[in-house]
Amino acid sequence: MAEKAKTNTQKTYNAKVGEIEQKWHVIDATGKVLGRLSTEISHLLRGKNKATYTPHVDTGDFVVVINAEKIELTGNKWVEKRYYRHSEWFGGLKSMSAEQMREAKPDFIIREAVKGMLPKNKLARHMINKLKVYKGPEHPHKAQKPEALTPSEPGLNS
View 1 (tube, rainbow, N blue to C red):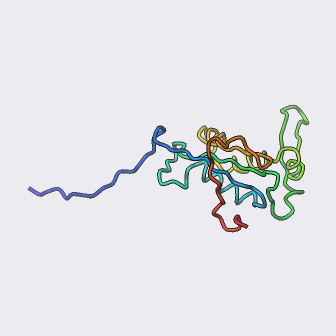
View 2: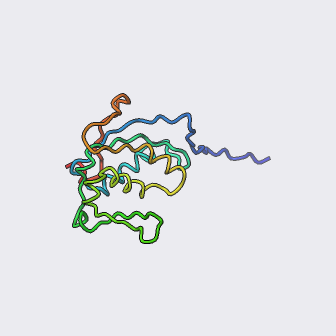
View 3: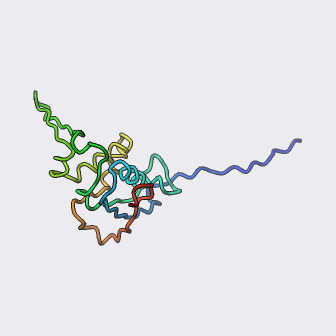
């Protein structure tokens, strides 16, 4: 009889909810470009920086962003970029420029940019809750002992 050839196959690892260790990171947004910073934050929230990344499980970390009012936009986007909302009534469309939004709600700018980079599903709605954005340099998450993180993309470590 012919013997079966032994194959050395490996199993694909799938993370389970109880096995995941979630860390806390603090990112200072002072002088950082919005899009470059948002991609780094979305990768941390999804857990793509870990070897245990599993697409259907929340393997990401918590991210605290401080100094949100000091974020940078390139070009003429402070004037030209618009944020829209609608009251669902006739003629209820309202818009604000990025400059007006920075004065009113600077945390909204970063949250919306990161939210647009996450998948559009229930898991992403859970991930966005792990993003904590604060206007100034203080945050109430010191008890979690977050580690300071300097984003790794070129142009962010200026």
